[in-house]
Length: 275
Image 1 (cartoon, one colour):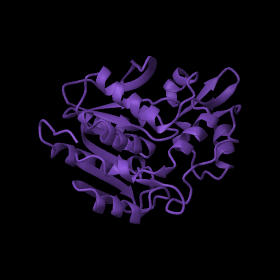
Image 2: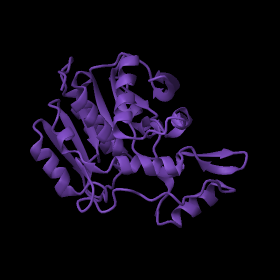
Image 3: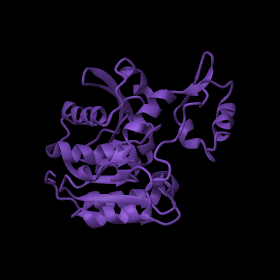
Image 4: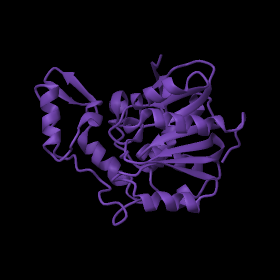
C-alpha cells in the first residue's frame, strides 16, 4: 500500500508516495502536469522486490504550493530537488525512473551527479525537445480554466481546447470551495515546459550507467527516429518500443510497461555501479 509522506527538500516540503518494505529503492519522477500516483500501478507490480518511491515534484500535485514563492521551474531546480530528495532519504545510488520531463530530470541527474544514480529508466523523455524534431514541445495551457462547476465540466472545457482525452490531466483536479480546478498553476506549467525546450544531448550522453529507454511508437512527443538515435549514441542503453502506445506507455500498456521495467531492474547487479 502506498503511503503519502512529506520530505523537506531544499528547505521546502515536497510530497512523495512510498510503499515501504525491504525492496530495492527506485526513485520515480512524473512528467509535466502529473502526480506521484502515476506510478502507483508500477509500485504494486514491482513489489516487494523493488520499492518505487515517487516524488511529487515542485509545481505539481500536493507539492504545488510549496514552491509558489520561488517561481523557479528551470531544469536546475528540478534536478537539485531530486538530488536533495535522494540524499534526504539516503537512497543513493539509486535507479531512477522518469516519464517525459521526469525522464529529462532523471538523465540530467545522472549526468550532473552520477554518484546518486545507478541506473536509468527513461519513458518518453527525449534528448532533444525542440522544433523541428518535436512538433509541439510546449502544450499551451495558458487559457485553461481555473475553475469549473463540476469535474465533468472541467473535462469538457479542457477537451474543447484540443485535448482528445483529458483523463491524465484530471488526475490533478480537485474540488475547492469555488469549484473544480487543477492543483497545478497553468502559468507555472507554461514556464516549466518552456524551460524543458532545448537540446539535451550532452546530458543524455553524460552518464554511463545502464539505461532503459521506453518509447511508444504512436507518441507525438518522442519521435521514433529520435528514440533510435538515443539508443545508438549512448552505450549501455536498451530501447524497448511499444507499438500502438502513445506518450503515456505506463497508462496505455501498464502490464507491458511493468514487465519491461521489472526485467531491466532485475538484471542489475545487487550493488549497481554509479554512472
